[in-house]
Image (tube, rainbow, N blue to C red; front, side):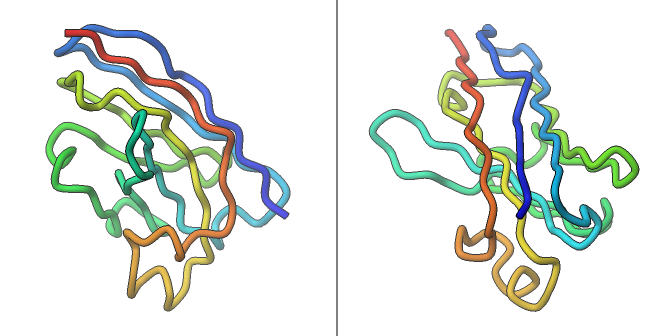
Length: 128
């Protein structure tokens, strides 16, 4: 059983940067692909970014490509989402997630069905 705990959310202004992190425990971290999803009020949860074992294997939603960067530290069991040039439409609860680094993830890295474990979420609010 993998436990995920997010941190780093907060209130920022449009154009600012913010970093959210996720600490994983209870499993072999390097065996999991790690991802971030978000859910805005009244909307469905959507994919943001994901990373395989290394930075050579990352995927981003079109809405965040070029602004957000996902990274992981396999020694510290952490995954980080660096968010730059934030927009009001980035306001959401951001969820960290982990899924087995295997064929399912490789085939559908942006699908929620490729992930088995979820954190409780951290709120990110971007004011205009």
